[in-house]
Length: 228
Image (cartoon, rainbow, N blue to C red; front, side):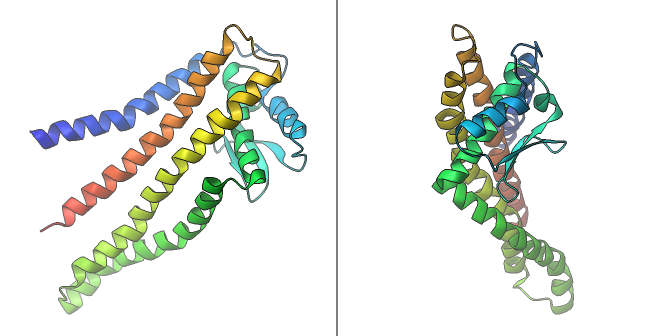
C-alpha cells in the first residue's frame, strides 16, 4: 500500500508540472498581438543589443531551444511569429542560453560536454542490455546481472545526470538572464507583466524538474526489477 501511494505521488510530481506548464503557456499565448514585435523580432533585438550578431533566429518544429553547435535560437511557430507574452518570454529565455554560451557559463559547458558523452554511453548501454540475455543463455554466467546493471547505468543513468545538470542551467537562463532582459526591453507593461513573465519562466523550469523525476523513477523501477 505504501509503495502504491509513493508511486502515485511520484506520478503526480512528474505529470502535474507538465499539465500546469501547458495551461500557463496557453493562458499567456493570448492576446496574440499584445506587443509591437514578434518573438522572433524580439530575440533578434536582444541578440543584437548584446553583441551576439552571429547568432541566428530560426523557426522550428522541434520545440523552442538554443543550438550552440549551429549558433541559433530556434522558436516554435507558436512563439516565432506571435506577439504574446508567452512568445516574448520564451524568446528571452532562449536568448539567455545564447548569453550563457557566449559567457562560458560553467553549468552550460558541462551540460554540453555531458550530452556529447552520453550519446555513445547510451548506445553502449543499450547494446549491453540487448546482449546480456544472449550471453547469459549461452554461458550461464553469473556475471549476467553485472552486465545488465552496467548497461542500465550507461543507458538510463547517464540520462538522469543530464536532466539533473540541466535544471540549474535552465533556472539561470530564466531568472538571471531572461527576466532582466524582459524588464529592460521596454515592451512589458511594467504594472502588470513582470509577475506573469516570471510565472511563465517558472513553468518552463518545472518541465525539467518533471523530466528529472521521470528519469529517476524509470531508473529506480529498473533497478528494483533487477533485484532478485
